[in-house]
Image (cartoon, rainbow, N blue to C red; front, top):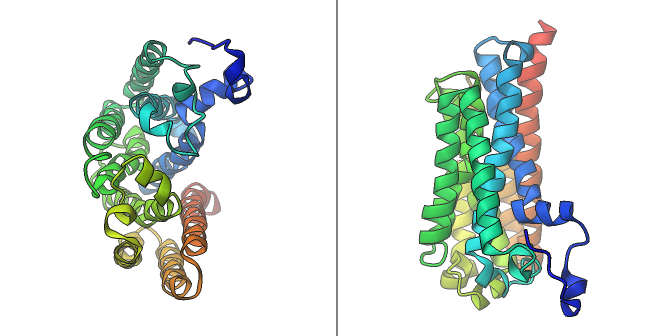
Amino acid sequence: MLIQSNTNSIERIPTSITKVLFETIKFGIIKSNLIAMIAGLSMALYVHNLSFFDKIGNIVLALIGSALVIGAAGIFNNLYDRDIDAIMERTKNRPTVSGIVDVGSGLIMGIWIAAGGLVALYISSPLSAYCGFLGLFLYVVPYTMWTKRRTIYNTEVGSLSGAMPPLIGWAAISPDILHPGAIALFLLMVIWQMPHFYAIGIRRMEEYRAANIPMLPVVKGIRRTYVQMNVYLVALFLCSFLFWSFNPFIAAANALLSLGWLILSIDGYRRKPEDKWARSMFIFSLNHITVLLLMIVGYSLGAPLLH
C-alpha cells in the first residue's frame, strides 16, 4: 500500500491506515451483507433443528470468510472503477482514486484477502466456498467489468451477486441450498435490491450521467424507473408467500413492509419532489431489509429456546 506524501492532496487523504483499509474494502457493504449471511445461516439452523453451538466452528469460519470475500470484491470493484469514481461526488475521495492505494498494491491485497476468505469458507463447507466464489465472480466480472458501463440491466446482474450471502450462510450449515427457505431468502434479496438501487440511481442521477453509467433513470427517465420500481415492489410483496412455511409471522411482516413501501412509492411520487421521493424510498428500503432480516435471525435463533 503506497501512502502519498503530496501536500497538495493532504486534505483528502484518510488520516489512518484503518480508515484507508475500511474505505478500500467498503466496510459498510461488508456489514450489511453479513446480516443477510447470518439470516441464511440462522434459518438453516432452525430448519434443521440445530443449535448455534452445534455449528459454532462453521459459523465463525463463515463469518470470517464472508467478510473477507465481500471485502475483496469491494477492492476489485474500486480498482476497476477508479476512473468513474473520480467523477462522482460520493466516490471521488476513495483511496483507489486518490492514489493512496495503487493498482499493484490493491490487486495484491484483494487477491490475498479473497484467497483467505475462500479458504475459510471451504473449511466451513466446500459448498459455502463455491457460493462465495460465485458471488465474488458475479460482482467483479459480469457486473463491474461487463454490464455496469454498458446496459440498463446492470442492476439486475449486480443483484445476483448481492443475493449470494444468504446462500453462503445456509451452505455453511447444510448443503441443501435448494431448500424453499434458502430460495425464499435468495429471491427476497434479488428483488429487494432493484427498488433500492433504483432509488440510489435517481438520487445520484446527474453523477451517473457525468460518469456515463447507463443507470435506468439516466437512460429511460424517472417515470420509467418509477413504474419498474413498482413492479418489483409488487414482486417483493408476492415473495412473502415463500416464507409462509417457515413462519407465517415473517411472511406477514414482509407483506406489510412491502405494501407500505409500495404505498410510499405511489403516494410520494405524486406529492413530493423527485429527489425527496427518491430519498424516502432509499431510507425505507434500508429499514425494510434490516427489520426483516433481524426478525428472521431473531426467530430462528430464539424460537428453539422457547420450546
